[in-house]
Image 1 (cartoon, rainbow, N blue to C red):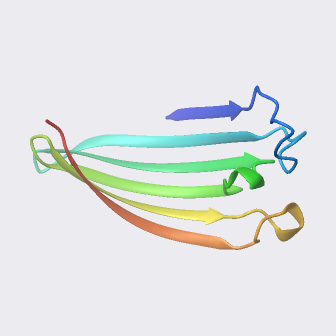
Image 2: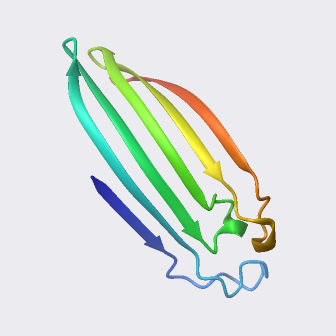
Length: 110
């Protein structure tokens, strides 16, 4: 299990007044499990991410993600990921909407 907490240590420049005075925070909680799938390395993972005061940075307020990947052949892998984002409420400057995405990644190591 991995955990990440990131907090801005810098003050945003006055050039962008929409960010001035905001103290943005983002975090990630992730669980990954590696296993053998018919003689090939495989892994599955779940993550829950969030942010606070980061609407102007384009980050979702919360994100849930699931990933599954496995090695097809030595040095060649494939992974599938599903992500569900919830934007900030309209009152907080967001859209109040949600979005879903599915990706497939083919990786070649050489």
